[in-house]
Length: 138
Image: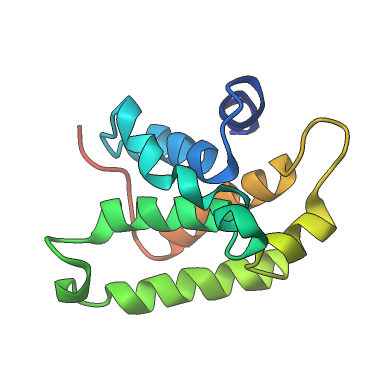
């Protein structure tokens, strides 16, 4: 897991949302195309101003792709599932806001917020397993 995330986040210089979504696309076979990652680009750095963590936003995008049938508000239980994931993220990492997470996890050694991205991706996989959410069929 970490090697793919390292590549997407460090080698390819993706932001936290892009790297998370790229990785989850690999794992869950979301069928995203290269240009689709730009849809979450603006969520990096907590939307550029330190609010909601981009890794959390990238995971929420993957959750939508995995679970939404047509429209989010018409997909039974989707809102609750999202709230449960946000709660799990906050519990596991201590915060959902980029600024607070950055204060705790950011490293000046060039890895930036890799630890946050890796923890979030691992949590997403655990959350999906616990909720019976599996990769899309090929």
